[in-house]
Image (tube, rainbow, N blue to C red):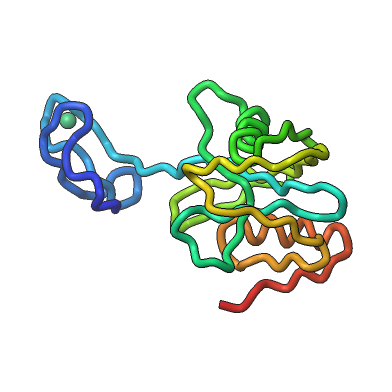
Length: 172
Ligand SMILES: [Zn+2]
């Protein structure tokens, strides 16, 4: 059960917890409300952004200096994931990407997210970072990219291996 939600977002009563549909879940204690906190995973789109034999990776504010990850973000309501990933690319690096293909859907259990990972190619031109979210970017030669074992890492590993790269996971 997720303990971050303590009050019913529907009526404001306290949430209790108990088994509903086979799992421990939070639910509203008010008899006439019926709210259940299902805690379903949140979809997130991510881009393996490629140009000229390099991947463009980004570092969020607050991450360690050596961490770089895929361009990613949340879907907006009513938005198709293919549009969302291209929007995120434009927002985060200021370039209009082109969708090359769907890499796959990958669970990120710790963050309770479902990652929808796409391969996107980037045009030439200057990268302009979205500075409120991002601290830096890096263009790394594809054969030097090493995925981390969580989150988008398995997607990146699968993509790299499909292209013949060894792509061992970084050790922790
Ligand atoms: Zn309620």
